Length: 387
Image 1 (cartoon, helix red, strand yellow):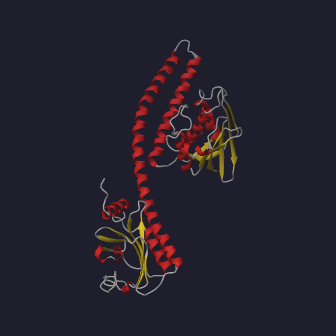
Image 2 (cartoon, one colour):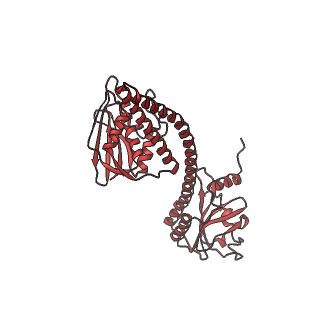
């Protein structure tokens, strides 16, 4: 396997960040200003250095530009492995004839440069402070500038991750759109068939009341599934844009009981009086339904499900808990289960995406969600929503 040259590796890292083609970034300009303030110098710059040019992507005290590497002071010491601090660069053999020092471009005396090293270990540029007067840096100033150089890379990484996340979300939205289309077609066929049966039952000379009840329950479930698919897809596409409507969790629970009638057969479910909040009704119903469905599924051998739902007014927010008496979730697994496709027990049916969806919905509403141990060793799934 061929190892890329240092120049190629640096160019690839700089290209990843996409800074050279953008206008000066306010966050990087702020770092440059802070650096000058820390060093008590009139000028500072953040440089990204390719194999041929130095790009001053953020400056303080002067207007940045692009210069050939042969004129760059920082390019000379880019791979020095440590910061370079010179009270008077004109007395250093490496720089005395440099155009930024000898007066051709500038007459820099004090010069301090701190390498910008990416998480991959590639030096891509420098954070540089300088002055036309001879001066010194204290140990505290030097330490602060080293830390500030690291923060420059942190900002570049953060912006890169944000762009990658946006791209990932766009791909997810496209995938969700296709899945939604594939789900809606058979669901529409099921709904049409059920409604045809319902119509025929109504017209029958001696309609079967029990059968009519079951068919109408199935139609209601199909309609709610259609609503869930539509609204959760919209949620994925817009990245968290929600409808803001009054949501009565008592009414939500009543709907969930109907939807989960089969799963809750034989189970005991007791609930406090639940709060009213503002949020997206369909998405919050999906949260409660998922947590109750999990509580109904995860039981101890030979024991029916026992589910307790409680609500506490914490002043600025509501805490809602769904507790079971199942086998519980180990402490070291309580965060992992919120990751996509993560499952605690492969013997229990499920996709492993329910809790991930719940977290996204709750956090989009400005809340939090987690798992805790229930009295008796079961699990309490809790979530908080702003009051």
